[in-house]
Image (cartoon, rainbow, N blue to C red; front, side, top):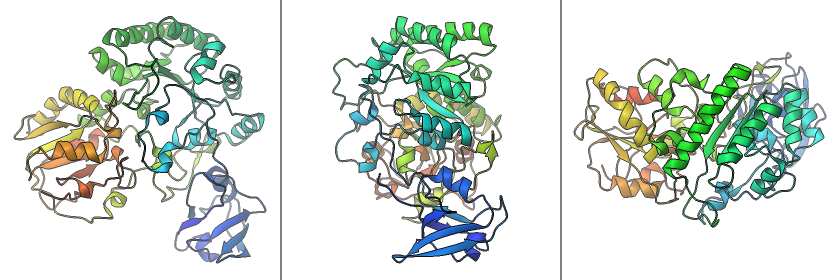
Length: 500
């Protein structure tokens, strides 16, 4: 990502930006004499009153004065999250999924960041190996909280080995510094069999209790392997290893409860699927603080499907959200914890997804009849979860899990291969293969999490699929609504494929 300046992509009618004559395409070189590095600075700068801008238009620069009250929405949205250089990752973790991508994808998908700003804006995980004193000062001053940090191990030598970076262990001092300044931090442990499970995982959680007990949470997630993995030492968990990880996590939950009054550490849903064990009760997740990281998704989906939750717990935009997300700018920031709220900036993973954007290329069409049989498209993990959750929900809706009513259409991921089994990584090629064998005239529900700007990761779009699909938000409330039989007069949206 090269160095640029904020470029206006939208101006609200009647806003201070509109009254000052700003137009789409204008480049903002300076705000009150300051070059803006990222959307965080942009939000803070334009929140002031009576702004002085240097605006570039048509190759010419001009001074623009903007009359506004402090805190009044500026009314101009800009094109991206970062305007200066992306802080790229200089680690060489063997388990990094970027190294396991097939060739020929969009260049943005190969960008590997370790930028604390993207952690704040999108929920990305940073290792802090490129973090500096100046970064700490900015995070603390602007209250850029919460942040997500990849820990993997608390032993310095072990962390060096896992990150393949001699700064891996020493950089944990920045984690301690962030916590000392009351920055909310969530930690992640990517567990690799034979590398940081077993006794190392025990040691790591002991280190968390001893040195980082003020972390907001810690989440253990399994490594993801594609068929393009070139690391001979990496492999997927066996069922016994998955059970061992869960036993370790559950044991430490009790220790943390006794010591801190909270469970602190949680395991990703995939571990329970791999182990063949029931998911914990919803209240044991203590607020689902890492729902978008795959921790507690099954239980939140259950609450949403059952009508217990009045709104979706969180928005999960998938692994590549920050490089492939929307560019419509989101909504203006609002204060939280003395800083900018995390869901404010453009492209943030907490921002709502726009079905209108996804369908813009093909338009609105009539879907199959609303009482037609339904096929729910999902990955292997999602299929396992839905098979348990759907029957009672469907019964309450007067429907049933049966081929002639509602069925789960499992999409095995052959494009990435390996243990890739989440819905967010479904691609057009695999969906085409599966849908080609499904009957026409049925309704096919596609979770929006696998789309970025209406496009799958392999570059295909829903309009190229061999069956019509209905794109629905990836939450239980939307799924329940889609399964409720209504009339053709509703406002459902479908994206058409080559055949019906």
